[in-house]
Image (cartoon, rainbow, N blue to C red; front, top):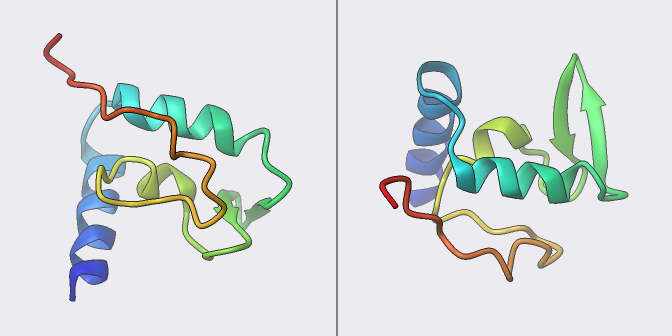
Length: 78
């Protein structure tokens, strides 16, 4: 159930909010990754199948290859 919640949160943030600092950092890493694929015009991860613009917005999500492990959750208000 938590995964469904994260998918909804990610898509909501992707579609209706400005891109967060956390998402920008994560996407910079993803765009250098060999698992990056473009499917129907969307950047996706071939390991998990997620659309990266949405997944990168969810603080609880992880990279299945461990590439986001060193990124700290950036507080937008600082």
